[in-house]
Image (tube, rainbow, N blue to C red; front, side, top):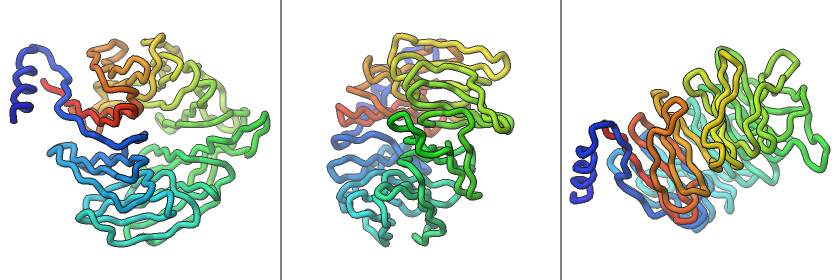
Length: 337
């Protein structure tokens, strides 16, 4: 109660809107990403615990019956957790496993999209589409290691990330589109595709190591911008495609002018996220241990994080979550008007 009062009192001291940390949670070692489901943040650590945190009430539950949980999803009634060690998908309610599905590959990622669970596995590389009853509706072999699940609305895209090794292309495909069993073909020797966005029916893609942004036209994929190097994410933000660089910078490609601008060019950025209403862009630096709240192209506020922030998510217009790996902490930050 004292903490809540102190936060509210601090917010009243400022005439302008402000972001403040309202709570933080201890997360086990080697937790690398936040999964979101309805009102829950779901975080798996390598010690065998998956953490369910209600972002509104700030209540936390822990599930410890998985050996090596790698991620989770929530549909409003059940949690779904993947266990990499046991090659299982667990369906959980009231902190108990109600049902299990054994997979023939080791699951590394899970995402709930349009009522279906998309699960990626390795050894062998496969994609599973599973319903809420744990019935496998579809399974597909994937030609290369592909740990990421991306989507534009309800359309799912699987980047064929490890498409290039030892100066050789292992596949002539860039993205798997599992809903209709099609692919985006690689027409421009694009290496290591990592993320994708859509704008007015046009698809844009970014490559990881060289940070090149490409437009997917009919049988051509021209490079239209350079987002530094080691780009992990792109987002749509105020008529711009925005991307981060682990080497430094938040890059903006303006869809109207075709021009590229950069801010925080000397600051390595590990992740970015956009508020659901499109007002703010959030960027974290794993080197500076900072969260940058950005409005348009200006830093509105800078907030200290714990050590090595690696994932930032904005589930609502006034809540920001920051996962700090080295400190094993999840920060909950709120927007006060």
